[in-house]
Image (tube, rainbow, N blue to C red; front, side, top):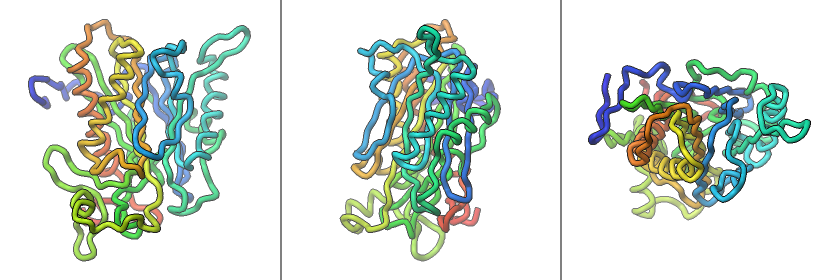
Length: 340
């Protein structure tokens, strides 16, 4: 299969898993608390990767993002953690560091090994319970479950308690989830994305314009258009139970990039969120996208081409995560609501 976007040729036949683990050296692990509707996901690059980040929206929760700024000395990261539990979930990064230290992965500083593990959180408290949040043991277990193979998507890891379409309150929301996708360019460069989708807005298939998830309609099995609701003033100024929202993810590539280029890739990948999550980057969201470059490919880099692929992979990861989700905590998935 070939997917052509503009003048770019995406060679779908070269994909192995259609996910971020199509990039050699990238591993992903989930740890899921299904009974408590929370969890965490780790993306590992044991050989180190050049990193970048772009934080948007009004309610982010992050760790170690300043290290990824081009002006700072640290050149590589070794893992990225995505976690539920809001700010409490940042504690899970300690477990990721412990695992990597035990594996000898990180910067050597004297007799010590120091792994660089940036992290971002999403708010999933109160979907089922608010007193269970990912901690160090969960981060450690996610690493132990890491794989370079096919990924579990939907209601898993950091996507376990994710929800979308909350403009009319949680009582009308739809289940979100975690999704992944990849694109192989015709020079052998691979771009993959992993996104945990937990948005205030609804989710639209950018290729067809179809609303695939959002505030559920009162009658039938359809979804309201969140953008239309907002523009027409049909959304309360602050619905009491809208919860909090954040979509968090990473784009990774085997291309050889500098830190400024990796930060550029993280920045443009937000367009993939905006293509599919509508509205996106609101004051009620804390959307964060990272970038990882393993630098394994010696092919010359066209940042416009690479960025375009990153946008498309991110958009597809959003759709995959929502379409793979299963209902939890009384919130049905898009497929369940539509009876698919």
